[in-house]
Length: 222
Image 1 (spheres, rainbow, N blue to C red):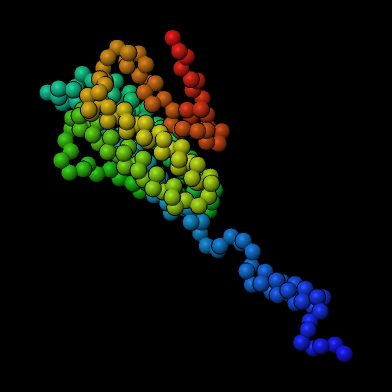
Image 2 (tube, helix red, strand yellow; image 1 turned 60 degrees about the vertical axis):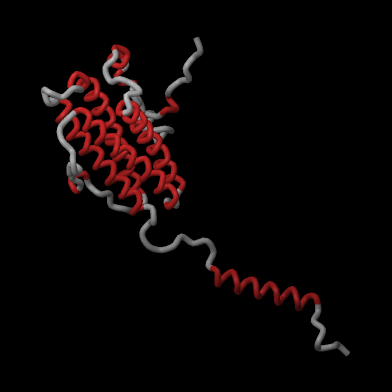
């Protein structure tokens, strides 16, 4: 006579299989959560920062084109203007890439027209203040990108943020060196190689855009 308290091996395995099936149905697998892509908001915040930088460089360029006549750094305004215009183009390139990514993940990019520039408290027209304004913007942007990387979910979003962050950091370091008088803005060497002051807008290649540090060869040793 079969003991009813003892289950056969077949019955035990059958019960486990049934339980597992119910559990899997309840879990629902690794489905993508419904709702807007969570990367849209932080990416739009970074895009806003890029437009703010573009507007800040516009204001800076206006001053560098006609610095006050009594400005002790007026003689440096011409090379600094070239650098500022190059870096503003970097920011435009960043903005284009960010807007494209936001659109591709179902978001609506903020527009440049929706962002305005307001001069910070204490700002007045001078070459030195243009450098300070740009340095503050670049430092804030670098920190913002670094902070955003922690919250961005997609690998593509983190990659773009990381490669732009490197460019913002390069800009800041050059401005910091100028403000701390570690380097000068008007030696002959700088004038000759003006377009090589932070020459690329990205650290690594983004899509088909080759304007990255990857395209620069290592220095050869003399």
